[in-house]
Length: 99
Image 1 (cartoon, rainbow, N blue to C red):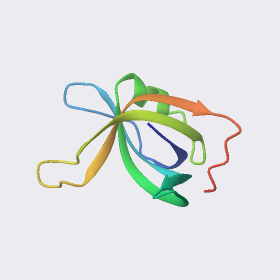
Image 2 (cartoon, rainbow, N blue to C red):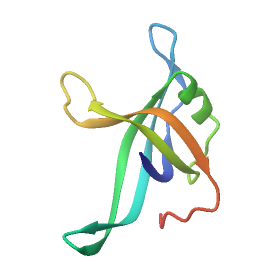
Image 3 (cartoon, rainbow, N blue to C red):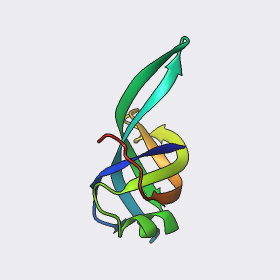
Image 4 (cartoon, rainbow, N blue to C red):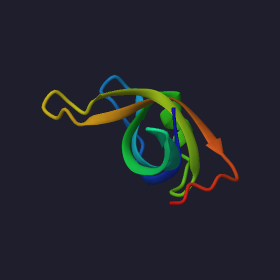
């Protein structure tokens, strides 16, 4: 699970099997505990949503606050860079992500 602000949203596309797909990036910022101390962390994560999650996200706008859940997988056979494959999306209101 990851919360953050939507940074970039590509156009809705369809796989060769006809499944809706949407690539996007999310910016995360939070305070985490590490070695007994608080630490400010931030990162940007590449994501992809398929099926109903892609259709739901297609109406979003950059800056929208999200909570997403999913799993990490390699971008492709040639690129081992991780991409978060999103299974569920929740739009959040009133959250400040410091982005």
